[in-house]
Image (cartoon, rainbow, N blue to C red; front, top):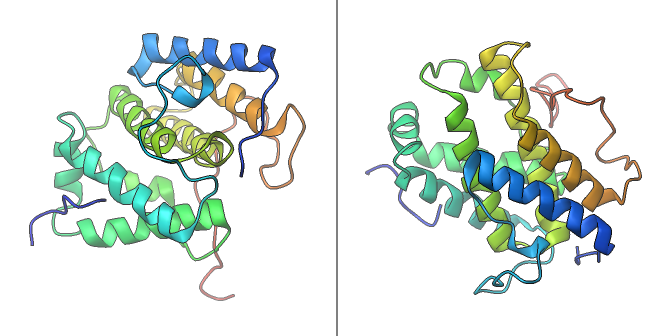
Amino acid sequence: MAPARRSMQAAAGAAPARVSDIVRHIIAFRQQTIGWRLTFMNSELQPAADPRDREPSEANVRALVDAFYRRVDDDPLLGPIFSRALAGRWDDHLAKMTTFWSSLVLGSKQYRGNVQEAHRPIDDIEPRHFARWLSLFLNTVEARYEPAAAVQFMEPALRIAQSLQLSKFGWDYQIPVEQQELLAALKRQRTGGAPEPRFPERPDAEPFPAKFIGKSADE
């Protein structure tokens, strides 16, 4: 079978000042980094054509993963890298990523793995590839989920990308400021500035854990 080209909580109202702050970061991220849009952050932008899910579920997480990797497979920058890395393993990868995001967002705790180790064998990754990955992922999430649900995917995605970039390019690598600012803006959108136990606070620039979620084999 050819590599897969398949269809790979209620939104809390933000204060006007916070929305403006987020929109400013989004505009900077779009213009200076990767050119994506978060339409739900700005009521003047065109709304999504299809209804968006108000909260994650096993079914819509699977649909998100399928839609995202269909876009990755079609992308001229990312497609060749993923095609080489996943030759003959697309279906397995999609299933694993569905488990990964379900574990992270729904708390299913079924995923076992090390994100950094999984990416270590891929040699030809540059900063622009991370930027493009974020562009496609955040855009796909935004199109499929209402704001409060979308943030549950976007914040970890930015943290994971940060961790992988530091691992790949060295701990002195400067994470693009637009990514850092957008991460901070999304965190404020989610929490209103207050810490939340599910996503414990971390010092600035500390990466998302590389190995997380699920029980070890001996548990």
